[in-house]
Image (cartoon, rainbow, N blue to C red; front, top):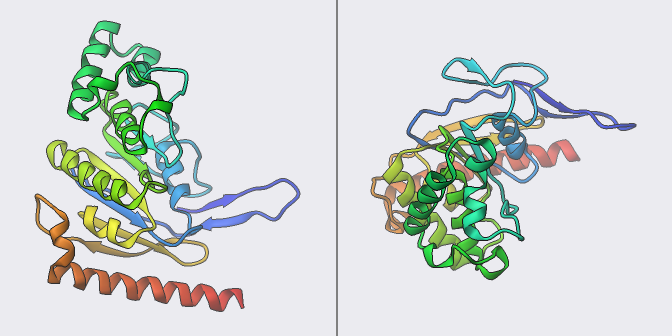
Amino acid sequence: MRKWYHRKRQPPVHVLENCSFAIDPGKLTVLMGMSGCGKSTLAYLLAGYISPDQGTLTIDGAPITGPGPDRITVFQETALWPWMTVMDNVTFGPMALKSLPEAQARSKAEALLIKFGLIDFRDKYPGQLSGGMKRRAELAQALINSPRIMILDEPFRGLDVMTRELMQEYYMGLFEETRLTTLFITSELEEAIFLADRLLVMGGTPSRVVKTVEVDLPHPRTFEVLTGERYLEIKKELMEELYRDEAVAAVVVQ
């Protein structure tokens, strides 16, 4: 797959070249790499917001031709409407798509808010929630649409360290319960290893997937795995790849 960004009165930017990867159903695939390497571009492509200049993205053999309710994306920036309550935010999707009757949408939203520990905040507004609570509300907002694929583009970036770790463990528990096919994008090495079943490393200029690592850490997964020998082996392997790519980038800049 190839992707250029075409800009008015400026040279085009070659973002992706010969970029190929697979996401297995029921697995949590993590895509990582340095800032600016094209990770978010891949998220936009998979979501159907933009199209490749060459190549094809498919789901079960069917080409992706645009956005669809089978793929839900959670970005770093909040997707909650500040003038809506938590309940109205969560039910907005099925109500707008008319995929569920109002009573059924509210019933499903209540079940999700109970699961996410937010039922007592259903009538609150986003400005009254903590950062972690907003992220949980956004997960409920996404899951109510019953997507086939969840795309999370650095969703915990900007949270304080403690809240970020809690959200990582929270999403891991949610994934282990649902086995919802997930592409999780991050530039944080420890986050990537902790979450991943398969880890894709992006590198090069223009970028592509340069390394694939099967992360065979045990489930159910807790932060205790971060002190294990296998975790340290995976981290060493990935750091060598990332440092190699950073050195190549520095040579190109010179």
